Image 1 (cartoon, rainbow, N blue to C red):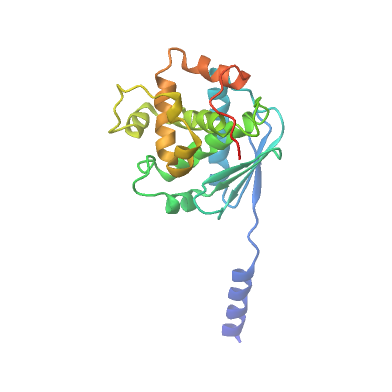
Image 2 (cartoon, rainbow, N blue to C red; image 1 turned 60 degrees about the vertical axis):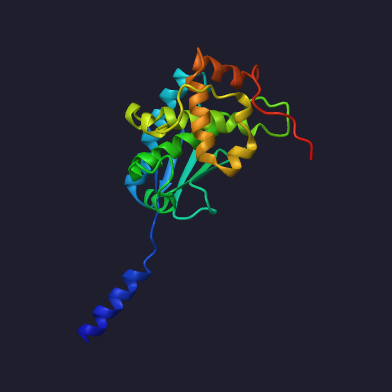
Length: 224
């Protein structure tokens, strides 16, 4: 009888629903829903860091309520996703991110938590740029350029140096190298080029401000 009771209790525990918890990030309108409190705190830390980076680099503050969901799965080759016009971000949980990260990735040396927070900053940047002017159907390059720059800025100086290890730092990166083809085919290469191009500006954050204001275009009209 006791064995049967124990077995029943075990089955009940295994089938017991797992509940997500929602955390409101202090000093912002960002809320995070996650299965693990640790992941929610990491996302809030990233939101606080992003706020500081945005203030220092001419990126508008996130003023609308924003929901972040830490999930166990996303579409292939995706670590995070900002849903345009919905004020909603999905982020893979840190262990799931690490499982997808290639050993050859520019971010391979980062810890699970550090990589997770850098992806959060990337997606938070997309949220901040949701209303950025664009004369074309889409301004993919401009959005990804700034998002990757903010992601790199969120890393420590030591990791930033590792990020561009083996790259010729003396060679100037032209705007033509910042294009959708490279972004889709080799996103890590695009990220490195974006960071180097940004770093080579006389006034890097001033340049970002010009993109945000629509004074500088990184995209071209595409005819389909």
